[in-house]
Image 1 (cartoon, rainbow, N blue to C red):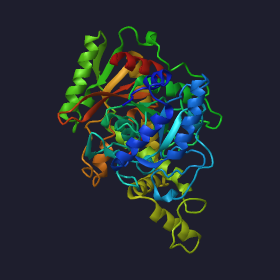
Image 2 (cartoon, rainbow, N blue to C red):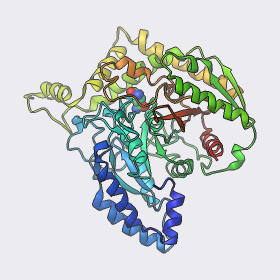
Image 3 (cartoon, helix red, strand yellow):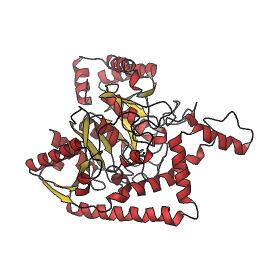
Image 4 (tube, rainbow, N blue to C red):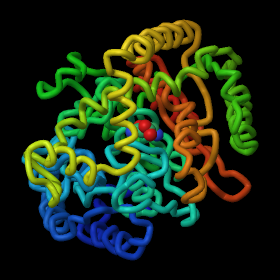
Length: 471
Ligand code: GLN
């Protein structure tokens, strides 16, 4: 299995493989492993046609930087004239009229888009069990979840169905499935990538990012998709420093902090804890400094996250009303019943739970008690995080307190599922970049991920360091 674009490009140059063959091989694996349920749709014919065009360009030395990269898209990133559903019944039959900025930028550099990938409905979940199209199975053990919400995006790369995928991360949805599947998953600084064409969940948290086998592919894709975009007012206005490998950035000893409470948290699996400690020991052996710190706001991260994201979701999802596009209830007879019934029948239980929760925290009697308060505590978290980064270069934690759990194990208990996000939501609340690094396995052979979080805007430093750590 290819694990980086540089391997593919060198084989293409040598003539050891053709681009058409490569795409056919991916299509073969997709077909063979369809029981994993990673893809909702495969663009078979189109990907093969595209391969012929890119191949010609490659042979005449005119191809873009991503020639040979075969990519899957999470089903909440729109692609012109292609269906998109956010894994929800409510978008049944809907086709996008335009492409997300990230998709346009990838295609302009000759990447091939091979299909759209299963996820939790509207990116709400941590196991992919909230998809209207069924859970995605982890290729390391098919009785276990892929993680979520970008579960299809992680498993497609894990199982060799494409080289890289784009997911979205509102509270961990790129990093946690990447860690469950033994891959790198990167959540960039908030605003570094245009969200034009990303179906919104919680707009002050959402960001697009890549899942891949190698840091070099993540760097390359970031170089191409990150930066200003006139179609997204929340995207950075400034040109960004290069993301491409720069060993200078990674030179010299760095200062790492780990939050003591993350290793003492209830529910952290012993093997995850041991691996995190061994990662720390590796860093020390390499000459880095590692210190333990205390972060007393850890217990409020999940409550803030679920108060604010549900509030934003209740507003963002009000556009799905059975009126203009997507699913419309057959039992509706007037305006009000069209909206009510289409939403009741079209949304799944988790999405409804969040819309109701969000509507509640925004309602006039509770706004101050919940929504405003959570905003204030979010500010405290940001300030405290900045303070930590005045003294340290990176914060280490496990990506998730557990490895991939059994399908069905937590689906009846939303609170247990929410607690699985404990280490990842911090970066979204504060806006920082964070990377999940595959680091060993537990005693059942399931992958473990370590998360590194960096100061806002230090995405490049983070990726360079990670590249250096694994070398
Ligand atoms: N698991 C988190 C949630 O359920 C994160 C989702 C995400 O990042 N999109 O909201």
